[in-house]
Image (cartoon, rainbow, N blue to C red):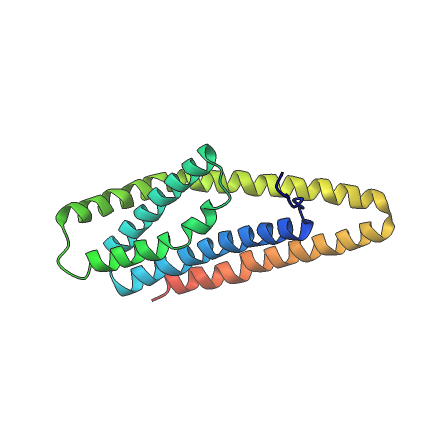
Length: 181
């Protein structure tokens, strides 16, 4: 009978894999945050829209694979795809562009424009949920003692003053700059 070494699971290895997963997700986010404005500033709006569509399709495929397959290797496999999509987009727009690609980018821009009210609604609902959760946490802090009540009172007063200042001063400057030639 061959000698089998006992397999050990080390919590540090799990923590390392978890932190690697977070780093991979952060790097994917930063790639999108860097590549889309880079494409818009160096090429054109249709190139920007085409890269946005390609990243959307890649994310859709990646999310579907993650649900169906669930491998921890998927975030690592996603890292080289976005630079590849950027290179494809630069290559396509370095020469005369196929009219089909331009119309596809135009359609994607129309879809994004028409779906923006939906995203505004989703953003407002998520802001409402965050505000409700903060209210619940604040209510728990108030129950702790008078020191927490005082801190929350000062914090809410500062928030009210800053928001009023923003509405009155910054909005007035903005309107003045728009209305006056």
